[in-house]
Length: 435
Image (tube, rainbow, N blue to C red; front, top):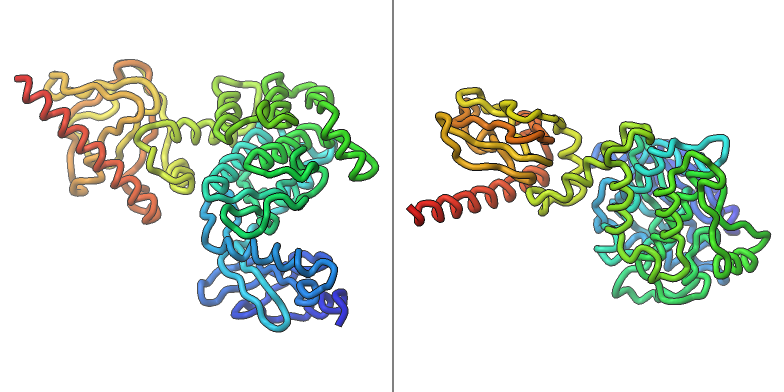
């Protein structure tokens, strides 16, 4: 059976493994993606079916097998809110298939046209979330190597999901990281030259995506791959603001640094890029969209000592069920005798803890207050006043929301609370020893 006929016959599939086929989501030359129902887990999933004829093709079969094996090997290994989760993978006589999280919405591809661009603030948020996801992947020893708008899903509220890790390079895997895999328009200079790759190749590709999202065009254009490679290796990219005036200079500089040919001049780490994107948002009123503030808030929490043990997925969850508050100097935050139905974590500023008007301690950014509301009985009352010693930013977490959080998130909180209690006991012992 020819490859084309194999793919066509797969259209009539009603079941793939244990998954019931609902409808076709997309078709390619060698694979078809179906919306399926996992009746065991009671959820919808996306199942990518690769025809065996494609895997056995004399010309491209080995590459197809490797791409399939690479993506399948990541099942259950990348757990991040902005990476499409791979649940399962299998192969039988007719098909090889990968079962993934189903993501509603389209890809970023539709926002790379000059007549359909995202707001600048939205671009920053999207790129920020992608950078955090790719940073996480690189920490797991995974380099994507094929970052492009078509491999980035965008849901409502700028919720990003990176997909298609078939081209990924995995640390300690047998597959070499020097093999020319990638989409030419997004390939880094080192990919074009078949040099060894690291996470900086994904930084470069994300820089291309950022340029496209801002301008609706690619930084380099050519009629063929050779001409494109020549430009990438010999020409400097233009500034995004040359094609879209409202792009601020700071964002121009971020894009250009991400696109540096010399890896020593490019961002050396994901953290550098992440910090600069978040830094743009602090105090800015010129870049619209609520989502940008979410990005800045995430970065603020990530830097706090209280959350140092939290995974990204847990921290995004905290953002969803917490409330951000600004408290003026001398305003009461917690009052002695009030019900303990919430606790807070200081993001910035200082607060005084007093009992019967006597100063007990001073709390600074990264410290929590009112946590006994979680650790004690539901009818606990506050045993002290907490007053803002200066202007304060903080998050407020209702106990009811905390108790509905995922097990993973609550475990992170419990570890953080335990660390806080130990530190406070040590401080109390030190004070007693000085009496």
